[in-house]
Length: 381
Ligand SMILES: *Cc1c(COP(=O)(O)O)cnc(C)c1O
Image (cartoon, rainbow, N blue to C red; front, side, top):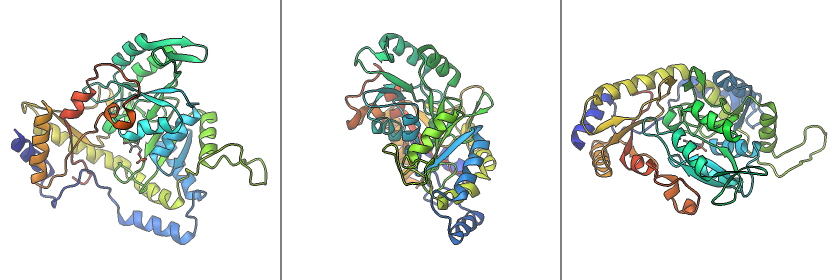
């Protein structure tokens, strides 16, 4: 019951001071010194060389040849979608269970999110459901695949690695290849996660990370576009730096661009933090292992787990209960003990701004969202 669940979580996290946050950044003295050095040096804006050094380091970590650091993960997602050509009147296939930014960025491009179901083990986009749905609603059009129900072009598939767990990329990529759809990875929560031994992010055509304050590596606020396609990387960088021409000495722009660069100030913090990524991942995986051992065999509970042959950073641990009432009771019992667990996202297709967006019928995302709670997951735990 709820008290037994709360006591189990309390035992795993031990005697750390209450209240216990869901996820806290870890700022060390070296991080503070790196930011202070950056401020003293005067290179604080997005043109700072340290921002290029952070990009090089992210490229190494994520096996990406082209990295563009941005002011947020949401801005990075907007640029990634623009770079692959998502535009007004298009639809983009997105998971119904995600942070709102995944669908918001689609709308920033003038397109519509088209919500797809997720699978229960890792909460990622369900390839079987995607295949069934595209077989039912996809139709070949002059400019690519069209949703026969709306008449709109389907421009991309945008899976999200939920809570750090890599989605079934091979299966999703095979469906993308069948319909000639670009695959864009929302890897905001998954810096350092691997799929079949390869880092997620740029396994698809293009992808993004977030460095918001609650992510595994933080720059305060920030994000990055990653790709191995030089043309896409160049387009994303151009649009994110006010589309200013670099082939002329004049101040000239060739499109309405965006001011989405990451200030050097933030990159300095990110570069200092990312050095500790392997250690942070190890500690987060250890914590996930302790939750797994503590809940093993407890009736009415299960943990969301990485898929086979993937290695998740376990950004947030997720406990699934049997029903919404059990999840609410567990949350109340945890909050009573000053343990700041929280419900997972409300499915995006139920939010008012997406009420009229296209979606798959009968999604299990609704039941999963009602039954799932995130447990405290800071690396220091
Ligand atoms: C954090 C996050 C983003 C980007 O968020 P920002 O706060 O803009 O950096 C995008 N998608 C998902 C799934 C996220 O968790």
